[in-house]
Image (tube, rainbow, N blue to C red; front, side):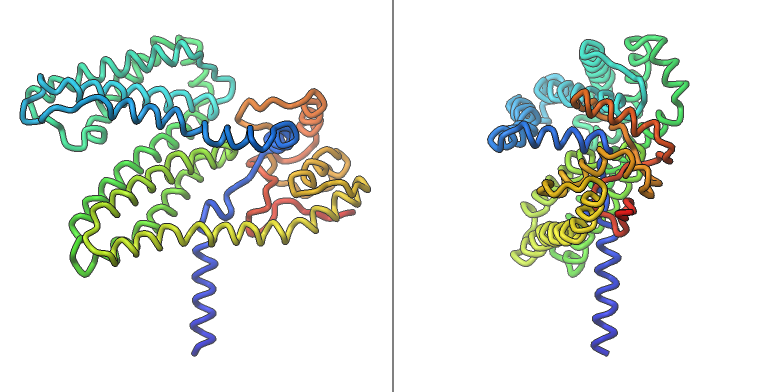
Length: 386
């Protein structure tokens, strides 16, 4: 009996791990791998730490600036609430800027200048706010769930102004790249879906608070996060270099906000403890799994590299994989059925690495997704030394 329970528990754990994007979804293109190796050799630890701290800084500053705009009493009506409308303009500007700016990573040969992006974001945020003000004046103010309810109104000026500002050349390119455009739109829809799901969860959390179903609702949160991460992962499968950023700065960010919100509104110590344990327990489990897989694959990669180059100088997994990629003869012997050579990001590499990428691109290998990080259940590299 005990063996059956243990076996089922292990199967359940493996199934749960299989759904974790953080556990198996991280894969690099060869382009990004080489760029990372070059950066790791040239950048100091201090510089790397500064970069890590600077990444969220613009958004933190933006949030503080928006929150510094004073809000008036909603009972005073839409005319007196100038602070609310200023915040709507800021929020719409940011949404337009970042959602449109991401298109260049999803659609080949699409270029959008900073000037065009700024002009589009300014025009859309201004016109959208002017369209919303009559609703606040004649229907209801403030409008509940305004970001979600007014999405159709937002889409109209966004689409029209995009055609006007970007010009016919860009519009024609989007028509030619229709398949990539659809994938990009699916990625945006996944982010919009996330806003709806978390709002529904917030209502459910409030409704269940203090009832016997409260802990059950809390346990839904990690399951919901995993499902949303997998949706985002599917939407970025063709540009997997962007997957970590998409997961961290959208799903994980939203999850952190709502975990904090739920903890703030939880009425019992048990509920707070359950939220904390549920949220924090996933991180060490995933890190332990990643460490185990890295330790498991390093000897195999080392064997392949040593057989191909005779080199014993590689000190870590990054060096091992870079040496393997720099040997076109060895590269041609690998079973690389899902390899992406080029990254969707414009990474800067040396002239030698650029020539290497050209050489690898010419090799007769199927290209579909991305590879090179050993965190899948079955490695995509057939690392045989022969």
